Image (cartoon, rainbow, N blue to C red; front, side):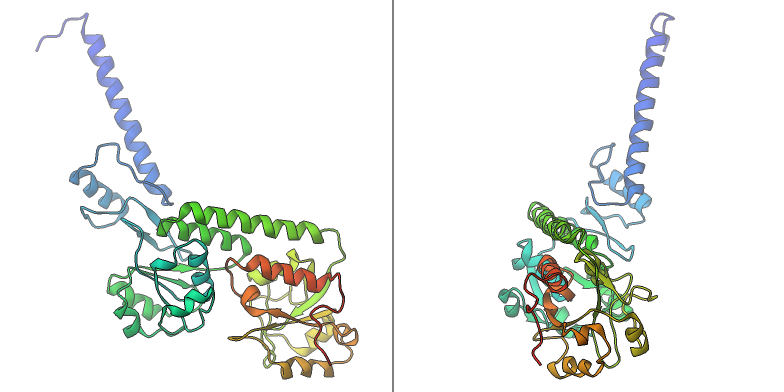
Amino acid sequence: MHVSNAVAPTVRRNALGRSSRFRRRVSLFIGLLLLGGEGVLASPFGDSDVTRRQQGILTGMPFMAHVSARAYVDDTGRRMYFAKPPARIVSLAPSITEMLFAIEAGEQLIGVTDFCDYPPEALKKSKVGYANPNLESLLALRPDLVVTPNDFLKPDVIAKLEQLKIPVFILADKNVESIFAHIQTLGRIVGRSTKADAVAIELRREVTAIQQRVQGLPPVRMLYVLNSQPLITVGPGSFIDQLIGMAGGVNVAAKSATPYPRLSMETVLQEDPEVLVFPVGKAEGISESEQQSWRRWSTLTAVRQGRLRQISADQLNRPGPRIAQGLESLAGILHPDDPSENRIEQ
């Protein structure tokens, strides 16, 4: 077809404009895919089967007509997609169970661990074990999502679940901020984003208020006794170690190389904590007799001053929505208005 000299520049400009827009769309599309975070992977080409095949090639996912528009990455770097919010969820940690109830996703929760006892509604859910879940019981629930902490579920169990096409989302609680993030991530996955954001914002506000209240007070050396024989405590890389600092304390195990180190009594005597804190509760904690056995270390400042204290294991040890209550209790132990509060009677 002949194009006059007068029209040709316009045609070339239009063609160049379309080509430029096309390149920008392609660049934007690939950029969204490479980001890999949560969000809508919207195609600039339209919502056709051909487009979804292109998405499958670029993301490494097999082509499916119902491929998810929402991508999530768990704390081990594993990516998964959900076309719609999961309706049948199994939680493998009390903290995760509490998060799901806090964001009003309790009805979607069909299975929990033997230790999931809060809120009371959790007791009515089917039990699947704990660190070594009963796979038969779990599979019988027909879950479309399993949420688990990083520390418990064994790789062979994860592999088995994935072989059966059951998504496993893994959470690792290394700091307090991760608790807020996990609440919000779970909210987006289960379709409760608005509620989850509100819970996380309020929780962050409460934690900040407690930090501000103890700011400027003399820090108190403390030892958190997770276990007595052998002596296990918390160290750098654990969220409880961070909570100790937020509550106005100094962790005497701060020089440890692991999040949950074993300490020798020689180290404890050398660091000389001013307060000993023991978690207590129905499911876990330090027995009364073990707590009293610490009194034989009479040279410790905590023992001389009678500052052996108890704290709710459920509130402080569970990285969930009650963590502000645990922090409040810990701050009260370290900087009490009433020095007799939480005292272990002799």
